[in-house]
Picture 1 (tube, rainbow, N blue to C red):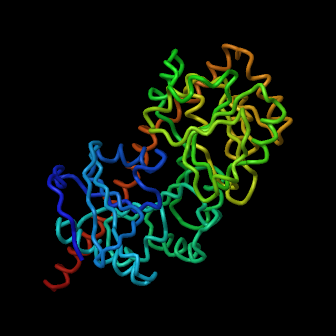
Picture 2 (picture 1 turned 30 degrees about the horizontal axis):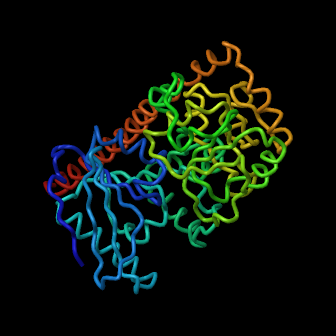
Amino acid sequence: MDLLELSGIATKTGLPSVLCFCHLRWDFVYQRPQHLMSRCRENARVFFFEEPLESERHQAELRLQLRDDGITVLTPILPKSLDNKGRIDAQRELLDGFLEAYDIRDFIAWYYTPMALQFSGHLEPKVVVYDCMDELSAFDGAPTELPKYERMLFDHADVVFAGGRTLYNAKLHQHENVHLFPSSVDRDHFAVARRPQRDPADQHAIPHPRIGFFGVLDERLDRNLLREAAELRPDWHFVLLGPVVKIREEDLPRAQNIHYLGQKRYDQLPVYLANWDVAMLPFAINQSTQFISPTKTLEYLAAGKPVVSTPIRDVVEPYGNLGLVSIASNAQEFCAAIESLLKPPPAKWLEDVDDFLRKGSWDRTFSRMWQEINRIGAHETDAAAHAVNRQQEAANV
């Protein structure tokens, strides 16, 4: 097996190493893992181990890419011919070879997917973090053995971070050290949308009013609600940004006033948002949305846009109950809420939004997480030192 060389990978010598195992690709939709790992790089060398790609080659290899943002992305390239056991064995061998080649011994293992334990469970990190951002077992296509590996990860983990209140309540009694760190926001990034921005070329010709959404278009999207809302208000235009995943594109509702503009980079989102009239969260109420805490809720609010959402629990509480987001259960209610939101919001609403946003920055969230990790690391170091002292004392008796 080959380990592809990369110059400059160890430019942050002297810093701790964080090995992040994630079910999402670094270049996929920019969300919680990217926000946190990009802040982590100021404190550590960050190695982001993503899902494998397949190749016609007969030998597995590990592609290493040092990004401009300082993150090193590790991508296993596996032969298509491998069965499941072969894929796990190959990833374990590639991972061990990488750690040995770059002399990474004392590191923090940061998990987003319990399934990574299949090839990394033999490692002995200084601290094991499980940042539980979603109930992955509830998603379409989830591996049937995922709950088993999550139980194993709870046994391995020193700390569990939960990405939303509902998820926190579900995990609270499964581990002795669980902390709630809900969705946060880079307010300055999205506040740009509060100022006039030149409309992007692919959105320029779409008439107003525009009701927009950005995110992954998958089984969580309420396609019936979107279809019915578009039929109820043919004079409104529904704009959706994001990749189509796990559902067929032909199953998306189609109408002259529904516009799919594809995936956009994180830095492009404020420009699109600035030219919307209302932002929406048209999520279906089903098993896959039971525990979600949509980061985009805060991003829409930071852009100063009024928001309508279906009754997702972590949107209703706190945003709906605080009057920051309108909640609607069906297409008729959705359209009625949008009708109301198309009127200029009261100044008090934006003041309340900004008061709320001050409490939830990604910088603050990561800082508190890192404090907990350092506390655990210091405790482990002290415990190891005490064990060595006891051994020395016993030898001198």
